[in-house]
Image (cartoon, rainbow, N blue to C red; front, top):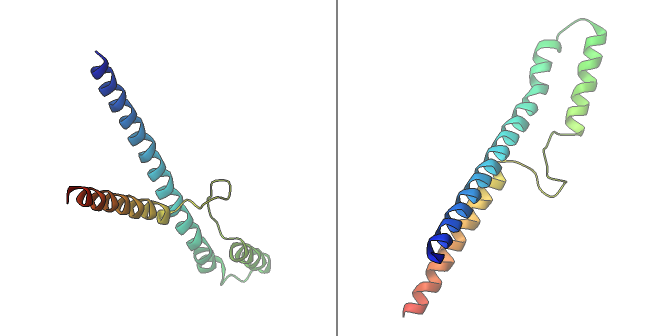
Length: 111
């Protein structure tokens, strides 16, 4: 009875880990795409309103452009790290490195 309970708890733990890992990856991906699209906003505004003859609109576009250049959009977790695809890639690299280290350690024990 203890073995089945242990297996069941292990499966539940694994499923919860996968659930939260998928949530983290989805949030990182969405934040990265949103940041990249926000960077293009400045170009789009200049395309449509940059050639206008209205002085007030030109001034607003200029102020908005300066604000976008001085303070780029980035989503972060309390300033510790930015949510973007670089974080996802680094997690994959670290996981690959750990797997390689485990395999090397196991091959050293066998010989």
